[in-house]
Structure formats: C-alpha cells, structure tokens
Length: 185
Image (cartoon, rainbow, N blue to C red; front, side, top):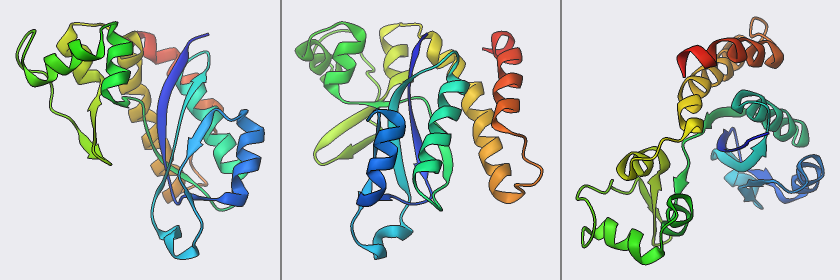
C-alpha cells in the first residue's frame, strides 16, 4: 500500500495531556501542534503525517478519526495533501544534492524559474511540492489523486461542520471517491 503525506488543519491545538491518546492510536505517526496555556486554544492547530492506505481518501479519513477521537471537542477543519517542503525534503524527493537544489533556487544552475517559496518559518523557507515537481518535470501520481480527493474531503468537512445531520458517513465518502478518482485523476 502506498504512503501518503498530508496535513490537517484543526479547530485548535492539542494540550500536552492529549498527546498520549493520539500517540497510542497512531503509533506516533502523527505530529501535532500543542499548547500549554488555555488562552492559546483559540488558534487553529495542525497535524501532519505520512500514512499508509489503500487510497489517499482512506488514509485521510483514518487519521481524521484518530485525531478527533484522541481529543474531546477537537475537529478537523481542512486537509492539505500538497506538502510544503524544506530544501532537504526537495533534494530527497528529486534525487539531487542539497547544493544542486540551492543552485536551482538561486538560479545559479539549471533552468530559470524555480518556484517561489510559499512561506518562511523560523528562518527556513518552504516550497509547495506540486510546484517543485512541475519545475523538475516529475509526474507524481499522488499529486494527481490529491487534488480531487482533497476538494471532496474538504467539502465533506465543511458540510459536517455546518449541517452534521446530513453529512454522509466517512465510509460513504471514501467509497464514492474510490469509484470516481480513477476517472478524474
């Protein structure tokens, strides 16, 4: 089974005492933002992982269930399956050295037009994998599957928050996606 990288936007960060249940449910495979002070609970939280599943939809839904079951009152708001990468991550994914990627970023070597970083955090820049893959001419089948899957699951998450009584069960979403993804991806 393939392994999928994705991130979840949460209704709030987790408290430190909520980490053990999540760790137990996921064998430590999910990394989350945590807080120690209640006044910080108003901020959104995040979770990221690399999760094995039959499909991306199945992997996402399993992690959503684990995250929400591990912390009462916590809800997944959105999913993102086009990861942000460091220079080191890029080098590993494209099979090049760190220096080769740095030279591509600065324009010192290779084709012009390396994508701009999406964000900078703690002095480190992060790039969107889909843009980097396009720059290097790489076809990543997981990115092709990611776009429609993420759109559908984010729609389901929004519906579930607005009118939970009419939102289909997660299994119905994964089943429907398994039927259509081969035709739209």
